Length: 501
Image (cartoon, rainbow, N blue to C red):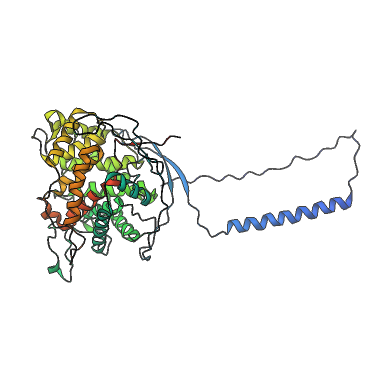
């Protein structure tokens, strides 16, 4: 992918010494010249030996390369991006699991109430802007390092119990990874299928199940390029995703075609969900590690999404260019945002399409959102719509945004609908203030308390979602884990500022 930098060797020759005829020539002392020649030979030999030592040094050097790439599709207006990548060595799948290393404790400045951001009911009079020098604020994935996670947990209301619940959930997910590195929504063990309860009926969607599981591991900062208890798990999952992509004229298709059936286009409604989840996982992994082996599949996944958008009314649904629905579109928007923040080639056309579709789905001045264009607002799709509006540029002071946040706050978290909780929790976290504190105290403790602690399902969550019968326990558990990672998984959009130079 990346072009090599050319090494140039320059041969220099000393100009000949010319003695003018009229100048007097000083006869050189012969013993002095002999000593000079001996010294020159010795130093040259030493330099030659040092050069051999450098050449044969067994320390592997990272290959740093730059690349400017362009798309040939004029319709997409994909902007050239200079990509600085590191040649990360591929990890052997059979490598032993390594213990996680403790990151140094980071120091941070106290909360700095520099600006009054109060803009609507339910907010505190002064919203404090956070200045945390040790967190990378150039990406919304900047809070996932271990030291950053601890800081953000303390600031935004996580606790030791919520982190233990995340860890138990990741252990359960890791134990259900299949031999080829994938996961399945149907998690029944082959030897004792009777032990598994609430498995999903969606058994032919490993790409979606794998993308969702990887999002949970990546959300807690676990990557394949750093030692840790899940390094091999994440590596094998990413290898499976890369192998599942199919090159097509629109980009790279992760809707689920595999093996000998690569010529068969998936017909199930799950296919676009699967592609979007895979695109998010690949983009986040690339953004967190700069592993250039992930760049091409992540880029191809994003370009596929942009090129199959509905060009009339915007949005995405089950098949290319089909009029959109807000459920699929919500996942696509997060995939595009993940690709953008990861530094992939990016076209604003995709986000413009999403904005166009949101306009068609909104009601009550933009504070409510329906599943399809022209439909009335629903609770889950309102949460999706508001989160998309936040990422697409609505300011915190936008009246419709605050009205929608108040609506979600008045409804509160749900004990039945984890899908709604997943989106609404992100909205409330970005909003901050008293509304977030009330929401968090309810949802955090309920999720921790409802996690299964014994038996085959220990570490997972029972299915409560009305659509959970297809995704089953795997779907419910992934969403619950990512909801409990909200404190650091994505940085809050309206409460962070860059540290002063």
